Image 1 (cartoon, rainbow, N blue to C red):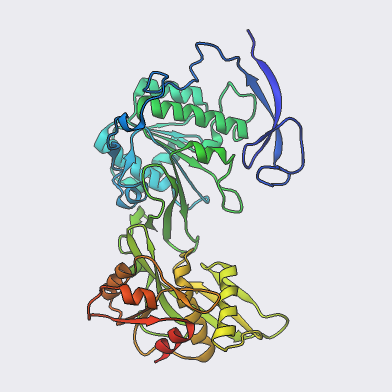
Image 2 (image 1 turned 45 degrees about the vertical axis):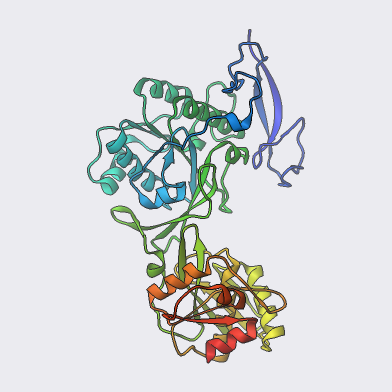
Length: 458
């Protein structure tokens, strides 16, 4: 019997369905994202294999009696990638990796695929955008010696891809990219909401059934967000994001979702002619000048299992025309406005007629409130022309009252500051009281922004 086809309207951002078209999605509030899709209807039957069969034989079981075991993992051969994934790739997992064009997604995946092929066996690389020759040229450049177990398959039909997987029995599958893959069972073009969702479902079924890890490459939108329906992010086990500045060689790999590990870890890479090189000492690579300079303060955040140090620079100049400008790179704009308001109210400096520029050197984006103090001190240093007499690190969150709030993992940040050769660390008073650091480095506790400024210029 021919399957019935019905028409629905789906939001391209979140995947929510509607019976008719409307201008705004009521679920994600996006405008002009609802498009028409044709969906095949299948009647459920007793033999419907889409129903999930649990280990309990379809009956409720006591959760405490369910047997558990450590997830089996395979190493990718790239330490920073394994760190972000949580000590390796879990068998049967589905990992989604995204990033801007040219950022290095295909490069790092090619390196991982070759390493896995050498260690574990057959790896299938499905290329929906590039030919065999293009992938081979990249592999020659970044891998050197290519394993005989690494297979390339230029194909965009998901049914053909799964048929080849059944024949070759790969231990690892890569699909580059999901926006180019289509299913003949879905009546829409490749890259549409229904196609991406249908192909992702088939890949999930293959990964879980055969216990084979699958890497999916995805495009991003102009705003930097993951393209396609947001439901895919909920379907996969891990979502990775590759970011970096085009004019810099540093690349940062972050995990926004990880069912088998933490989402706090980051991986650092440096783009070179021979591919992605790991950067184990991220702090040392981000700080080029350890000498105190006007408008420059060293700060730190704790990412996953390691502290990351970087330089925050500020420039305060008198505004020439119109309103004063506020420009922030690597720091949230709203956070900068709050810091300026606190400096004016609690530190007694007026920046109404001054342009303020602040930058996190090295292309890093902090995303942490523990850099508030360093940003405030850098602005004050540039405005007053004051420079610290010794290499110093400043860490702390600034409240609207001007008081400093404690930060996590202060002891580990202090130990890293000692390794990098700094003489003193300015911390919130509560952190300074709790620290167990010895006499090798000076610990300065500051209760509020005024105390921190006095300690910095002393």
